[in-house]
Amino acid sequence: MSDDVPVVGVVGGGQLARMLHQAAISLGVQVVVLDPDPECSAALAGARRVDGTWTSADDLVAFARSGVDVVTFDHELSAPEDLLALEAQSPVPVRPAPATKLAAQDKLHARRTFAALGLAVPAFAEVATWDEVTAFASGHGWPVVLKSARGGYDGRGVWILGEGDAAEGAEVLASGGTFLAEERVAIDHELAVMVARRPSGEVRAWPPFRTTQVDGICTDVTIASPATTSEQAAVTLALDLATQLDLSGVMAVELFVTGGGDIIINEIACRPHNSGHVTMDACITGQFEQHLRAVLDLPLGDTSSIVPAAAMVNILGGASAWDASRLAAALAVEDTTLHLYGKSHRPGRKLGHVNAIATTPHEALHHARAVADALGSA
Ligand code: ADP
Image 1: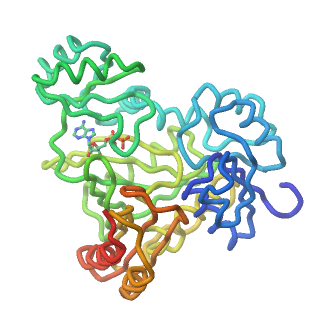
Image 2 (image 1 turned 90 degrees about the horizontal axis):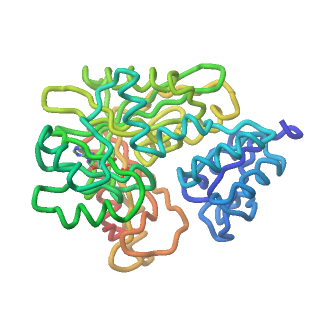
């Protein structure tokens, strides 16, 4: 550790880095971000910023050499090749390691890794032409879920295509990159399990969350106990996966649950995640504090829920920016905690989230939505 204060270097200064900085203050830890934008969300909240970009291997290496004790990440946007260069030249640990992160960055690699570990995944195949998509559909049926292996998020990079969508499909496939075709799973509901692992091996999971996606974007999350059988199985799966992937830090495991209760793994994110924001106010240790503990190889905190039920709703920019009276109306809703990211208003932009606690998930969601509605959230 440099001096007495551990310094965590975070690649990217977005809202996740901002909330890592917030958690670092109570732990007596310092967060420094690598970001080209002086007005990035974390810098606006007072985190020290090193100027540079995550798309340059040189900047990543210089950041690792700038006096930080460990390098971790706000996002998945650095190229895997640049992360390997960083790992090779960094004088401090890179957590999670690039080999672990690849399963979060490349959907084809992820599917193959999960299948090799014996986990249930949707049927999939690498495809490069519409003929190959058609051949896949002859075995698995239409529609087919076409995905870009890299670079997708919030539903960008996912297309649900029918037999008649040859022109659109061919256009997507011609746009460059690697693609996979997947069977369309009959999803009953989606779950996310957040887990944490520190390099010396300790693992912990939070109670599982039910997540709702609209057009590929997570809109709300509820947490409830006791967990159902499927949810308990999902937690076991996520804990095992953290160890198998040699995770250091926190990880979100996103799962599909079928009507029959089968659990199918969709994807992972090896960092604090939108679906875990609810832990900030509903659990003894939130995901941001836990990520700092994990990457510094400190004892992990208790992940137990401290409330009967809780929910999180994202605040997206509405048609116009909110004024003081709308903010006052939002803050008047009981049993809620508002987290804003200091970002300027743009319709549809993720500007913050609200956590709510209650005696049932339904009631918590109702309170959280009232706050989002007061702010005109899209
Ligand atoms: P992103 O990386 O953009 O979040 P995902 O692969 O998680 O993309 O897909 C976004 C959403 O699309 C999922 O949460 C789910 O609702 C839906 N989806 C993705 N893959 C499938 C599939 N094979 N079958 C059915 N729905 C899917």
